[in-house]
Image (cartoon, rainbow, N blue to C red; front, side, top):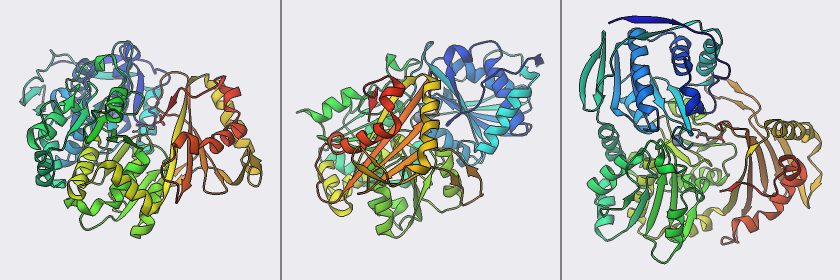
Length: 541
Ligand code: G6P
Ligand code: ZN
């Protein structure tokens, strides 16, 4: 088969963000765009000669075309084998699992996670290393450098490879192994959790709804929840993955999963509700009449971890991203284990998990996971909750009350200002930065500032340093606000304002009410309304 060497020029802006390179789908479809980036991945990781890779994506528009390009480029650069999910489908956690379980050299995940898909939506390409996790900054920097100097790429001339049925094919000298996307992942879940206890729970009449949001987890959730665990048929809704996610925004939060929220808050709510995102790594947990924030969710999982077979001997440590609420810290303190605070982005957990310093990790952005993989894992979190509920036999609402009675409650909310003028967002952050040294001791909208800093992280395992990871301001009485610009958006800038306050006694207040003083102080400090020209956030979670 013929290998073409195609001349090209660097394309500006191919810098991998928080989670791979994400752009508008039509940008990825421009001439050489995808090819330049894929070649830069190969160059940035020292080539793929003789290597084995995993490949799959969340099924969004262009997934199938992009997969064929990646295969032809892997073959042209001498890869030995690529393990591909059927129809080029793999959830992000399932891809992470295959990379690890099969001892490969890494993998390519085609996804823009929770961003909408379709011709006018977003597309993304991410490289994960041999540990199954998103490439660390040293690797993404090398990839980005390669995009700046690229002058040619290699691609094999060939027809599309048939990816519709499991089995082995070849492309030139490269073996393509098509696998069932669900099988290995489902087997892993069965090793981790007490499937018998969960099956008994369903058999006793426990009801749930899992909203797959027309994204990748539909087939996984059906196979595991309905077929293996006996949840009633139809418990998994919107289970058919679609290239445009049915026109929806596959982000599992109260805004984008509103139908599920409405059901769970209404008179016909099942016992338990959950949802996952475009590529299956995020999760949302809702009980009858109660939404569980992601920050609380990871704290509950940590507090109850020993009820799950895999974690029955306890946790070695836990970790959360900096803007995530400190509910987890309170559990860690009680358990007597370390709680690490990392920058936003799952990749920062990788070293802690590899080194055995953390077993469980979570982020406010609806990601929860453990050392079973090196990605966050949506369905795993749902199964973890089911395992806990199966043992503790109480409604989610009572479980939360019990948790807060033990640890106190970290009231928490995130306010997002989306598609803000990039310059305005930048100057808001730089003015904030300039104020940091003089903030402590001042009073802002009635709240006394006790501490203010810009978060930076020194990785305790490899010593790498991550600077400028968001501005945090702490108030007397335990309140906190964090300001950060999103690293995953594709238009303008998104300002995220993370708000938190703590109470030991009043456990049932409305978070937005309880957070009013912190919200006012945040605006007094950063002049959010003036700078963004918005009088309220676009999204509140
Ligand atoms: C992705 C990453 C997460 C991270 C999130 C933050 O989902 O996988 O680890 O928390 O992005 O996104 P942001 O838009 O806040 O940068
Ligand atoms: Zn995702």
